[in-house]
Every structure is written in C-alpha cells, then in structure tokens.
Length: 234
Image: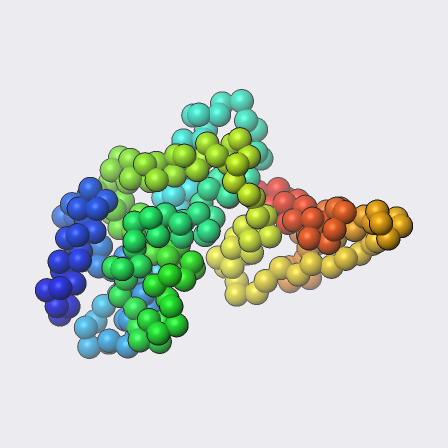
C-alpha cells in the first residue's frame, strides 16, 4: 500500500484540476511510471502506458472536434497539421508542468535521480494518461472541459501562427508511437553560389521516402521536408 502522504497528494491534485475521482485507483495508475511499477512489484501496480494510449486518442477527438467546429472553412490537411502541433509532446509537457504533474508521479529510483520529474517525454505521457483516466472515470463531457481549459488557447495560437511549429519533432513523435527508430534526413542537392545556396533535403524512414523540402539552410530544408512528410502521412 502507498502511504497516507501520497493519498494526500492525490487529493491535492484532484482539488487542483477541480475533478473528484470516483475511482482514485485510475488516477494513481495514470501517475505510475513503469520504472516504479517494475521496482515495486510487491505492490502489484499497473503502469500508465495503457491509459496513455487511451488519452492520446481522447485528446485527438476533443481537439479535432473543437477545430472542426471553430474553423469550418479550413481544409482537412490544415486542420491535421494544426492538431499535430497542439497535441505534440512539447505542448503537453508544458501543460503537465503547469499542473506541476511531476510532483505527483510515482517514479523508480533511477528515473528520480536523473531528473525524470521534469523530463518532457515522461510529463507528456503522464498528461495523456491523466486525460485517459478522467475519461474513464467521469466521461467525455468532463474530460472535454478539462482538456479545452488547458489547450483552447494553444489552438488559437497555432491558428494564427504564434506557436513555433517544429515539424521535425512532430514527425519524430508520430513515428515513435509505433517504432523506436528515427526518421533520417539526407541532403540530395545543393544549388547556387556560396552566399545564396539552396538545399534540397529528403526525409526517409525504414528506407521509404516520406517527404522532400527546399530551403536556404539545411535546417530550413529539413523542417520543410518534415512538414511535407506530415502532410503525406495525414
């Protein structure tokens, strides 16, 4: 059993998010990293990975529905690109930090010692798991209000271009949902004089061409190639 101090933390988090759980074991599961579950097998705790999977889908439907209603004249491709940014790991990790979610995580000793409570990947996953747990415990309407209270402003900022759209990161996160491998970028052409070069870059994954982009620097060309890949995938 976890001690009373942790139970008090769960109560504190529920007060912070203004949601009272009917089944607090769901909330505890959402906050349990696999490193803690592996190091404390005697507690027979399940980690948050299944809830993370569910929360990812719940976020997609909530954000998609909101954008579908708010931007009736936007084509499918543009909505898909906006959604990819809004539900990307950097933004979800920021929301987790806003909630101080790291304070409530159950982490193994190794993760604890190496700064896991503020690691973006762990925080983003925990946020998705939290969304999944709220959905299971309280239903779609409650989790919709929770999600939009945190992400509605981000949708608006993405729409007007105020968020820096890191297409390389977004593409990598999309691929790593089903694979531990990374996309690879290749400069296939350099044209023009040294002071005004144009680079052409291809991004490939598992030997397959995903996208191509041109830019005045390799970084710009890589971002455009990643954006092209995201459009092709969507």
